[in-house]
Amino acid sequence: MQIYDANIEVVNLNIDSTDKPNHYSYGLHPWYINESSLDEYVRKLEIKADEKRCIAIGECGLDKLSKVDFSLQEKAFVEQIRIANHYKKPLIIHCVKAFNELINCLNLNNNEVPVIIHGYNNNENIARVLLDHGCYFSFGKALLGYESNAAKAIKNIGRKNFFLETDDADISIKYIYRKASELLGIDEEILKQQVQSNFENIFKIKK
Image: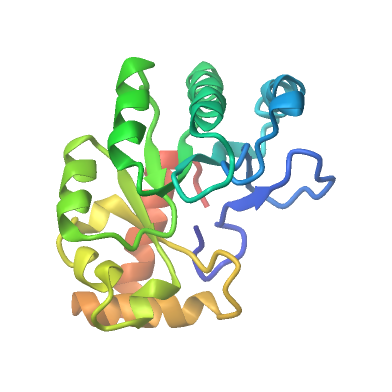
């Protein structure tokens, strides 16, 4: 999630990273979970999640296309829901073809922190269900395709419910803002102020 100003962004870090940007998140991504090291990494996450500049837990979540056993993914995700709620920090979610299971996990584990769906590019029906469950959305390079699910969804979820990102795409965040403002039919500066407001409200951080 980014605003033009690099002081207002969330950078996802590997749990063993020594980098310390202004604001960052740690999480166990469903692509890289290993059963033999899961307990160790959960313990590391419990410690690192308490760092002041760690403002979110993630990317974490569920991915049915991942080679990692799905039950192991669920086990890791449940642990991260627990940690996020203990520290009262939002969850940044990676989810592929597992939104029903994702919602069930959140509900069954009494999640009370904000949930942000990273790189959203799914259909409007899924967006509506997620919105009904109080989720937020982060849109990236998929917005650049006029007929993409992301380009359609951003028009209908409400301006207070989304963020913008580049993820690992080799593209400036300014292009994402330009496209989002075009899709929404609003001035780019107004959009920037709205995303900044969303950021401050969800992460409890003032610029």
